[in-house]
Length: 231
Image (tube, rainbow, N blue to C red; front, side, top):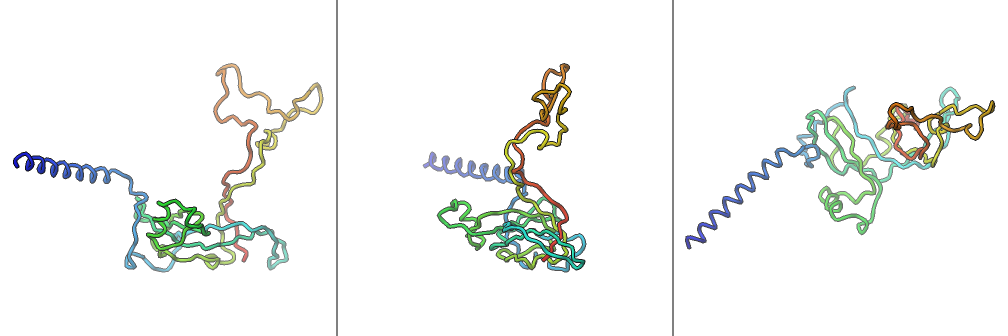
């Protein structure tokens, strides 16, 4: 019995040490993405100020068309569709003056969703989403989980920043990719009209990192700032 009691005390001590070490480990972990469900009293509902930062949306490009403004000037516009855009979760940040909203859009069949993500959606009471993205916001612009965001989130004339993948152009040369001038058209030049020219010198005996060369062009995220909402 003494041996059993000794093992019990030893196991209890080990569990206490393990829990203490886990608490210390959690204290060292970054608290950037600790999920929490705020209460209604925690939502600082107030009028927006010039310093307020609202959430963005995830949209699908449907095509392009044109509109005419009040001066009769034709303006090319991009048509975007907001498909089942909802607030999925609210995330804390290390900055008390900022939070992050996780926004989801589209729909996805349950069989095509991993179990961890399915548990994430069920914990917040929203349908599985095809795409998720996080937007930094100020506390006065927090939206409750499950809120659906429509085109009424914006007003005509509002300026927005749009980020989307650029059109992929494949493998391109330096004249198209970087705007190089190329070589001369004549005066002894042969087969080097569109080449990049020298790629370095003899002193380092190597090519510097980041040297502009031919390569794959496009297909990367590009942000265009201050685009006006037309309608």
